[in-house]
Length: 102
Image 1 (cartoon, rainbow, N blue to C red):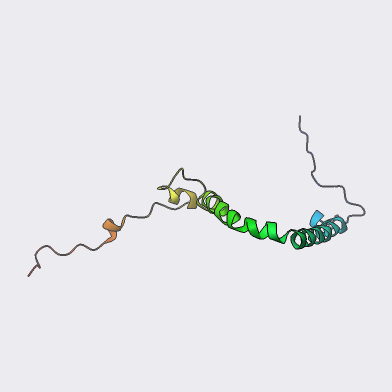
Image 2: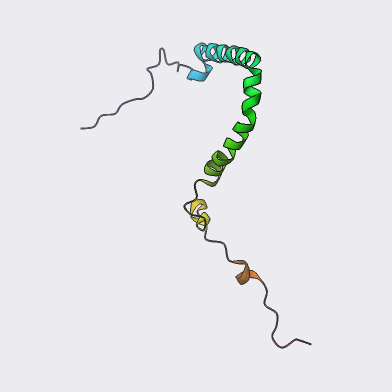
């Protein structure tokens, strides 16, 4: 059973429909959302400004989770980038000659 389903809408006369965010419905949605956001912020400015310190505190753990990609593998960063693990600082430091001490 070979069922090939196309996820694209059929084109009319060979013209592809525009993506959703470039359609007139999306532009109308963005305009209505901007107007609603303006009125909400202008009428509820005191509530919004009062919540900013709390939002700042809540952003710290969220940045930790999304920027560190979790805390599961701290030592294996090279596996995510496709490279080999970087050498430790002690193996790259030059060793002084043993017989040249004053």
